[in-house]
Amino acid sequence: MNFDVLLYWMTHLGEGSWVSFRKAVRELAPEQAESSDLCRNLQIHLSELGHVDFFVDESRRWKVRSPILGGLVDRPEIALLCGGRTPKLLATIEKASTENHCKFLVIPSTDSPSQIQVEGSEKALRAVANSSGMQFVPNLATTLVGSLISIDRQLDEATEEPAPHNWAVRSFDLQQQKWVDNILSHTAREYSPTYGQCRYFVATSENRLLALSKRESIYAAAMLRSIPIARYNSDIHTLSVPSTAPLPENFSRIACLSSGKPSRYENGNIVYESLSPNIAALLLVGTGQPFPSLK
Image (cartoon, rainbow, N blue to C red; front, side, top):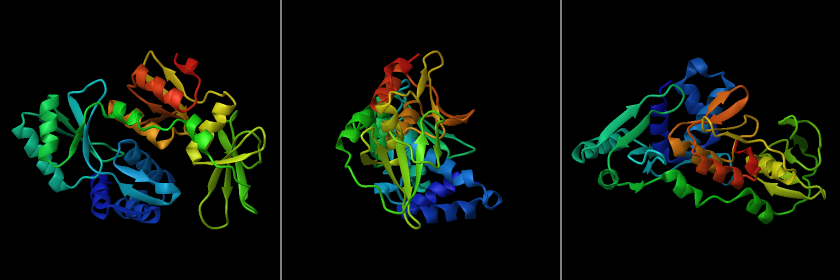
């Protein structure tokens, strides 16, 4: 499947429904049309690398982000193209790169759109972005950290609501690290109607239900019970979380844009590579995970 064509199509539309996204993937990859993981993996990579926002405002819709050039944290001479793209935009960036004595690189991928990199001095990268009608953001991941809302703050601001009536319920078992078909206390819960959107809550020790998003509800529950689910290996600079408990979207995006590498799946975990200790610490603290996990 040509994932570049998929991103071109999404950029042309600007936004759409989850149903339209799945249909486009099936049409572009008919040989993988029955793969339940294909759309999910694409959604994760398109989100992590800053191209598309999915499930906007808790809906089942996606929206393409505006294109920007973002510098890597540990290699500031390299900038990634994030957001939407078209063949015309790529040609413009390549021409501007040549004019400003920068390297223009297209790095193919087997499971996401090609990665577009521009290499040069900060002044040259800024000139390339300006000539292409884009913003240049040095150290993009560090900049995005400033816009994060911690799980602790989200929990403080969450609204208390009664349990939805006659909805199916699952709970996140923090010990088994998976969703189970039981009503458990002091953890995240998923309420599913017969038709429509699921809703997610944190059931506190006082049996209050606080409304949060899916990923955030898991990390809030883990924080309240001081259960570590994210671990950083400082020797090889990797952050790993269970595949059943992905980092909240904005945190995951920072982890990937810090190094320019999408996450990978390994032995039931999602692994973020080449993550500096400083960024890892910010992500751990922001998600309410114990700081001693930095080992």
